[in-house]
Amino acid sequence: MPAISFQSVSKTFQTARGPFQALDGVRFDVQKGEFFGLLGPNGAGKTTLISILAGLAKATSGSVLVHGVNVATQSAQARRMLGVVPQELVFDPFFNVREALKFQSGYFGVKHNDDWIDELLHSLGLTDKAHHNMRQLSGGMKRRMLVAQALVHRPPVIVLDEPTAGVDVELRQTLWQFIAKLNREGSTVLLTTHYLEEAEALCSRIAMLKNGKVVALDSTTELLKAASSNVLRFKLDTELPAALAAKARVTGRIVQFPANDALEIERYLAAVREAGLHAQDVEIRKADLEDVFLDVMHKSEEVKA
Ligand SMILES: Nc1ncnc2c1ncn2[C@@H]1O[C@H](COP(=O)(O)OP(=O)(O)OP(=O)(O)O)[C@@H](O)[C@H]1O
Ligand SMILES: [Mg+2]
Image 1 (cartoon, rainbow, N blue to C red):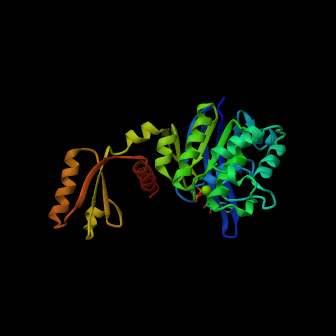
Image 2: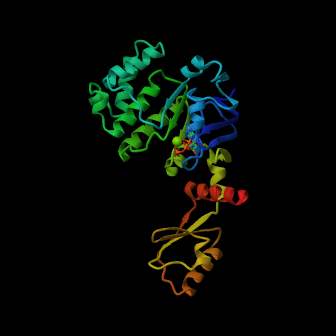
Image 3: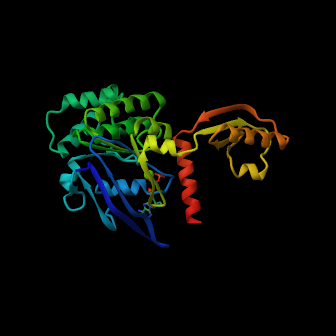
């Protein structure tokens, strides 16, 4: 039995400008014990899918099962198995950190879990904030608190919607170490993030969403294999000719060409030279998940056109 099963999930919002389809037949399973990545550009439908999983929104059609339990018809049972860290910062301003965690435990009928609360506070760097009112926390601390709240009832399935947005480098590392430990101990993790190097490092399987549809679904290793194997990267102070620019990824002065072999790399460098341009800081690197992501998003655009 999968940990999470999305079965042809579609969602249409009624808006002032008419119906808008945010999810279109999303279908995939996350197995127990997996560290699974859900990636996609802004507006792809990731949060909508997670809201349906969390029972906060209703699918227009299709269903979602958590450990075989339907989130729409057996919501209380499903909710106990889920720890969801929402993308939006929502919190109760009247509690301090420890009280909020105790309250949340009570909500799930969990008692005598002070040791676990201490461990959560420690692992998330919140120990010295335990008696602070929620209003007194900084943005990054509030996000850590959301993680603590989601985990307080020790759910077997952990869902993280952009948990590291606005969290500093050091704490991102601690947070990932902690989540990876819970995963090793058997928890299933579903993660959305725009930090693709985090996804590459952590997730064993990845689904990519675009315009509400799954456009890629595979193990991280296979996704990386499918991409162009190398990337030629250099800096340029002048503009590339249009014919070359069409094949490149340009970010300010940085130009990157996906390339499969040495011959292709040579051809690009020759073309740049022939255009009378001077490439600086030339390097060749292995393709990473960001290259794969851009590839997939670009290809699904061509299919649509
Ligand atoms: N309540 C709503 N009413 C109408 N449209 C909505 C509503 N919620 C989301 N949408 C639309 O559905 C689409 C998907 O939104 P969603 O928040 O799921 O994207 P996302 O993949 O989480 O993006 P991001 O990376 O920016 O968090 C967007 O076009 C959004 O504007
Ligand atoms: Mg979102």
